[in-house]
Length: 297
Figure (cartoon, rainbow, N blue to C red):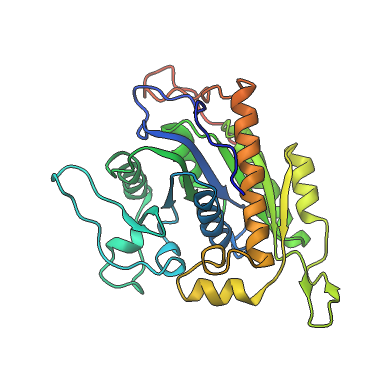
């Protein structure tokens, strides 16, 4: 099966956009840590690639990069011309992560905000991403600097919100939805991860409760793209550096991720067809007329 292509569609791209050859920028984010956001991001990326899209994956989690491990990539990016950085590549997907630049993968990145902003800017502007249909960005948990920086620097197609079913997760994920609304990041859809477990006898167990994904989707006024079950093969293949969508594309769990990618693609194409792609209203010029981001006391 092949999804409709993104030909003829694109987010609004200005002269100052750091990603002028990328049609769509999609954030994978959550207000909560530990919900499997990087697992969703990597498998979603490979699912989009398997549907015939040219895709890149940017690990925007500077303090906790997971992409090198989950995609089994090591090595350091190089510069052919001394100006731009060549991204690493695996399974036909272009990749960039701070993890590729660390001498020791177990070392902590201890940076203040301005250094983080500078690294993100370099990963967008100075990396030779080339012509892409999608650049997927795996964001850190929370509603902090990274999402704010991106909202001010690049026209974002939208965000995919990841949650798990239980209230202790959704209480934080609601905040990420609110943040997106305040900084004009459209929410494309919601993925509920670790939704249930099916035991060897075929009995379904909702270990973390139910309904969290649907509640987030209703609050965000966005579709629930899918419910991803707990499946040990996801963890096993992820630890081996080959996400399950690539390792066993015909398995039921891989088909779940492929269906999520199809839903995402449909929403992106529908938004573009409806002309719903206006650039965020935030002034990126740095002038006195710059709009201040709202802060709730």
